[in-house]
Length: 91
View (cartoon, rainbow, N blue to C red):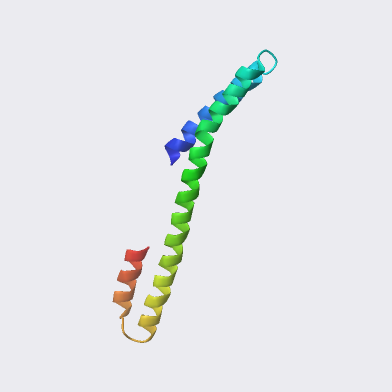
């Protein structure tokens, strides 16, 4: 994701630079550069939304698993060593 962010920064900067440079001379070309910037922004936004959704689901499942493990340890089903091992695997 770091690479996509760097590409996005360069892409947006160039698009904005050319838009501002050309806005007084040729409005259609300036609009084209704005559209060019959108070609990266929309897929990048969708990608980040999907990854964010996956990450939040993963965090919920991990916390639920930790709670279950803690309950098993409290009931004496798991030893402290087993609990710590499973916890380390989850995290």
